[in-house]
Amino acid sequence: MNAEPAGSSMISAARKAPYLDRVEEHDLAVRWRDDRDQEALHRITMAHMRLVISMAGKFRYFGLPMSDLVQEGHVGLLEAAARFEPERDVRFSTYATWWIRASMQDHILRNWSIVRGGTSSAQKALFFNLRRLRARLAQGSEPLKGAAVYQEIADAIGVSVADVALMDSRLSAPDSSLNAPVADGGESTSERMDFLVSEDPTPDEVVSASIDDERRTMWLNRALGVLNDRELRIIRERRLRDEGATLESLGTKLGISKERVRQIENRALAKLRSALLKSNPELGSSPA
Image (cartoon, rainbow, N blue to C red; front, top):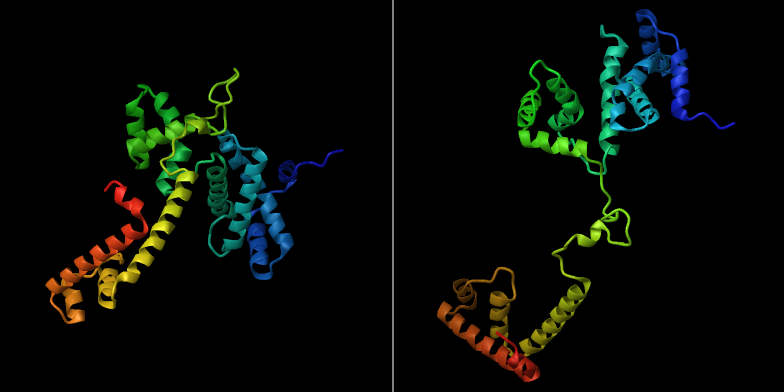
């Protein structure tokens, strides 16, 4: 005989667990908080698993397995038990409801779609309430349609109409794989990915550009050998840095006028050009 799934086993046990009155609930919560009594924790959580199952049923229309929702709700229930303060005049079920719902909603947001959505509190509210609000507006004495529905929902939740329209389209259409065929049937093997155009360079272009850059760097380093120390310093400061030095600042450093710096720079550039053309004659025929 096959073992009973964990989620189904948990549901069966929850249906048999006895209810707790206020006094017993308080006593068990104190025992768990002060003594870490595992039996007390087990009795509290099992007595409230009916609440978890009931809440899981409210999220079943998102298409996720009921057993998964129940297990996620159980995680929220354990979190509530860890944070519950028995001295407060609040029943555990009231306190645990928020944690159970939050755990289930987080699970749905992580698994409902491969596209992450509902990152803000307003977006989460829109995700979980859109269908309910739309159904309520459609059943009124004067049913709203089209843009009017989006506007009413946007006002109720506090988001833009564009957000409502985008979420509605996401909830109405399933995820599509890029590896899915473009058309059903037929002999075509084309996938959606085949029609995506990338603006990035191809691998061949990347390799070619890398080789060209290395070759130009080697040519330049050889050509720099024809410059004297002053010319080399000016070229490096003015031309080979991300933020080139000004003529005036270089003149101050070298103790000469900025006009003299300009003259030395022009002379050095001419020497570099001559050296490059001498070692690489083909550069002279390249387009400017």
